[in-house]
Image (cartoon, rainbow, N blue to C red; front, top):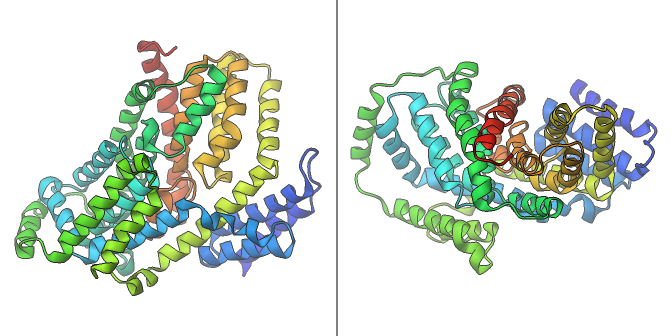
Length: 466
């Protein structure tokens, strides 16, 4: 009750504080409820879904939002895509295909936990240009694979062995998913929005090749270094497994030929991934593709609806993530985000600094304001143009400023368990505590920003972007 009281006190303090000039009382009251809910997500006085329900209930009881507004994000595809990823992952594991793929990876790279992790990281990177949804790619494909790998190696939250290797693998796979998303326009659904907004500001489009070339060096540096940094900051208990490849090969021999359920699971996942890559050409969305894959599993009895219903993390994540997206989107619709970005812009301009420190401040404000957002697309739509315009007005080179803000719009998802579509499934798997999730996310964010500013800036100078 003490933690719940803290959430209530924070929300009440904001609620009864005078709304700043330019902010409506409705927007200010929604901010109070949103911040209280975020505090609840962090402190967990109740399960996350329950905290979200209390937040949504508060918005309606206080008449801050209507029912349709409060629950509007339950029609958003991202929370549902994440939930379906949980159900697909269960089928992937229960069919035995997850164990087979995990043992195959262990047999090839399994002498060390670090080697296994690098195999996962760069496999995800190779798919990034082709799958334009980080929730689908990382949450739908690599999360179930990582989970199966960890469970096959005897690392499970349910029996207290999560730190054996799973906590490290899960946190690393999540962190690097934000990097691979930043490296290609087609690696994250909101990247084309940033390109469109940049085109309006610059007067010419950013090509796929320009974006990819710009992200190549800072992205690869981060992909190579992140597993090593986390290996030091958050090391697995089991580091060397010289006998693992031999044992994995023996397990593969015991499994024998592919079972019917494994073949059906592979077919369902192949159909889903193919539609994630090519379905846009035929008007087939990511959720429709995922539901088709799940439907194949259900009809063929690879998994059952009772199994899906029993996946409590899926339903819990669907609830709290949709609630945060809904409140965050209405903060934008009610004008608070525009007011906030305008105030930040005014503060930065008021310092009277040269363009370099001004641009650095803009980057920091833009990046860390992502604590207020449960969607990269919402953040880009609300703040990208304003911050880019100020950077250019301060004298920053236009194209590098546009690219840096756009690519960091993916990387900033590293901060929280709700800031990007790949975060909720990895967090809800239970391998990493909230405290570690936030602290490691903040530490890694400093590294990422530094790499993009300095190594990226030097690389962009070499290739003539500025």
